[in-house]
Picture 1 (cartoon, rainbow, N blue to C red):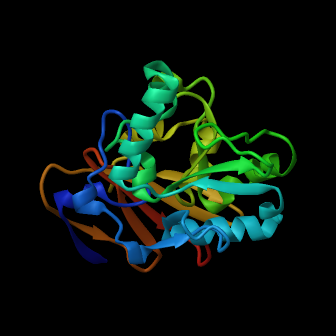
Picture 2 (picture 1 turned 180 degrees about the vertical axis):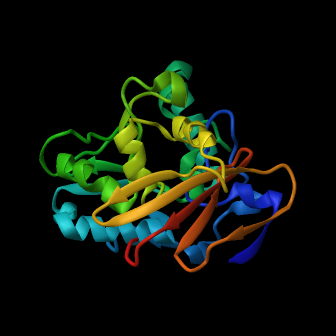
Length: 257
């Protein structure tokens, strides 16, 4: 067993941080420096993702030959860039459209480096609402996304939960096994964070099996620094939720992302 000290400020970092209208991105505490950002495609060096998300996206695209029919549209954004997009959309499209499809500056997933907008390759691609259908190579991407840790972040019918309009082009890296669990349970990230509260760390974890792998997922609420013991004989990783605690994931097999 290994002892770990978890600090309160660490809840603002990790692949499962919830960023929405309620929970702002704590850029000063968990912002990714430029050296931890990579392009998702060499031909588009200005479109960046957090390192692990970029690597997994490349793996997925290589597997399905995705770049033949898909283009990256928007990845990591600075707060200033998000402010410019928000102001520009207000002028061009009005408040209702902007509030539906553009996150409030400071509350955008794009600032985390974990989100990417993708579009079907064509002569003209809409920056705010790129076309990304459920057929062809775009459909293949959707079918395989969870295997590599990506979810469709703003699905149809969940607008009241996410606070954002239906965006079939916006994908978020949450990692394995979480993308698979969310897909199986039909949960958005907001719902997933709440769902995990019924599996407190040290008691009854959520068990998820995939191709011979078993994952144990649990939740740890944190109001101040705490020391925990964790079984380090198997791989484990910990992510803050950007709200009030941590998601602790333990793997019971030797292989996995």
